[in-house]
Every structure is written in structure tokens, then in C-alpha cells.
Image (cartoon, rainbow, N blue to C red):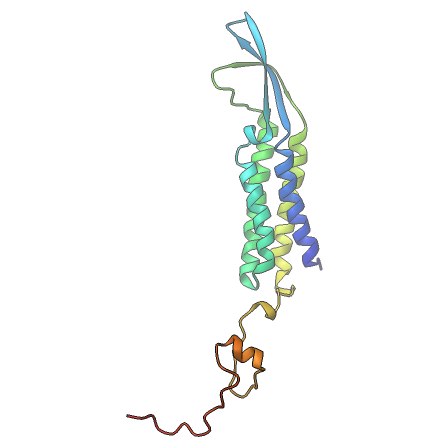
Length: 185
């Protein structure tokens, strides 16, 4: 049985890892300018070659924090959603790693070099997938935030302290009416 803290920590690590690794330079190449007259260097970060990775990583981080606030079937559905987002991340990142296609506009890239950062990003996406599945499967048994965050109903049988009476907007010094009787017409 995996603990709630471990699962949420792994979701945060996976989302933040993808976000940070996508900020690194993944691709460098030489660009032929004016048909061999001149060349320049072309570089691209992970966010540029896999543009959906960074926004999805932010969603994973927000979803990991939302796991703390929800409970029951909503928490399980959120775990499934996070696992699917991790799968989308992994497919996009591994798809780039296999195809190595870079959109450089109308420029011709020569000597394309892809750094292995995409592999690390794929590992972080795999962490998100596994943590999302664990959240979906075992989150029913996790404790919720607690009843102290929920509104408590008041009963007439309970005696209230003067501070609670003041908080409710009543005058604690006023004597209660012993026999309210029928309302005047």
C-alpha cells in the first residue's frame, strides 16, 4: 500500500521534472542561410519541440495539489485523469525522440543533434503515469483533509459559549425569553 504523501510527492516530482527538463536545450543544428553562402546555429528547448509538454506538466502539478482537497470517487477520477495526462506526455515526448522532427520553418537544418533530455522527460512522464494509477486505485483508503474544514451544523441542545453567541451575532447578555407564547397579531 502506497501512502498518500508518497504518491502526491511523486506526482509533484514528475510534473516539475517534465517542466524543468523541457526548459533545457534539446536540439541544436546548423541552418543553411542563402544556399550555402552562410550558416547560423539553430537551438530549441523541449518546450519548443514538444509544445504541449509544459502546459500538461503544470496541470499535473495542479492536479497533485487537488488530490489533497478532494476525496472519494472524485479523487479516484482525478488519479485516472493524471495517469492519462502522463500518458499524453509520454507519447508526445517519446514520439519526438523517435521521429526527431523539428519545425524550423522554411529553413533547412544541417547536422541535427538531439540531446538525450527527452529520455529524462519521458522517465518523469512515466512517474506521473504510475503515480496517477496508484492514486486511482488506492486513494479510497486515504484519509481526507478532515472535518475541521467542513461547516458544522449547530443543534439547539448544545450550549454555546458567550464567544460563540457573539460570533453568531446574538447578544450573550440578553436573557432568553422563557415563554415566547403566541406571536402578537
